Image (cartoon, rainbow, N blue to C red):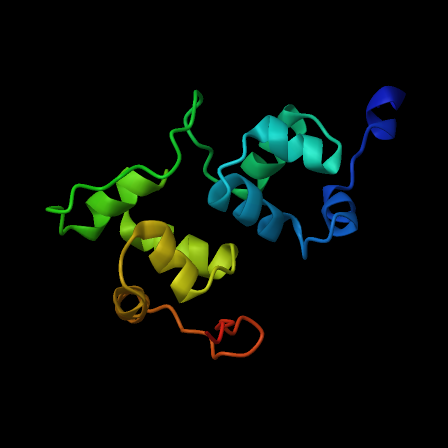
Length: 149
């Protein structure tokens, strides 16, 4: 084995924890998907290259966005009723079941955050989770913080 490769092993989990994230999944959910940061920006946050971020994401099964400038969350035609169309317009997932399941189970977004991301109601997200056979978490650790005002 080439000795240069053994010295270049990067502990990404440790790097993201040093920056205050729970794990790599929550780091990517927040920075890459929710804040729409580029791979380069994600790498800069934890001190690695965009190539390292991309390779780690691929190994863990994350879907990568298409390269090029990001317009942010795309506006959805108000006439669109099909949730799959909304998901394709606002995310880089191909179907609602994959998008909602991944955001909820892998990225640990709550139903409110998913609804906000997709521009739909929280009730619809809860209904779809049940329809897809995904167990809804009890409030607690992920409990929504409401502001009094």
